Image (cartoon, rainbow, N blue to C red; front, side, top):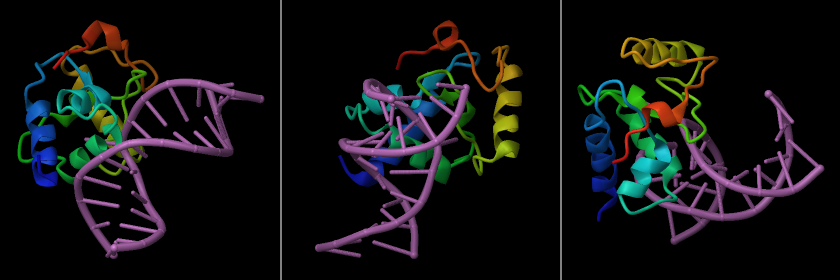
Length: 105
DNA sequence: GTGTTGACCACAG
DNA sequence: GCTGTGGCCAACA
């Protein structure tokens, strides 16, 4: 698998997450056969905030933290949270109950 | 080809 | 809760 396909598959996995569900950076990495590439998954998403309609706001950290979005600054995070809430996902203090919404790829 | 940088993770204090 | 450390891997300079 080429480096190029990696990011492509990340985005593809992202687009398969059902509305109202979330998955994690690790889970995506795992589904690609590279359980330890969570960090690289984040990179792929950052470079494609939208390509052009990828719901990357449904990807969160393993501990339920919302992770980043856009510049990873406060602005981006708030936007991500807003999108999640719009899908009936309860977000409390930049965190969610991962087990209630987890979607296994 | 070699660093450095992160939308990360796990574990230790 | 917090910070620090070591590890990971693709993208970038």
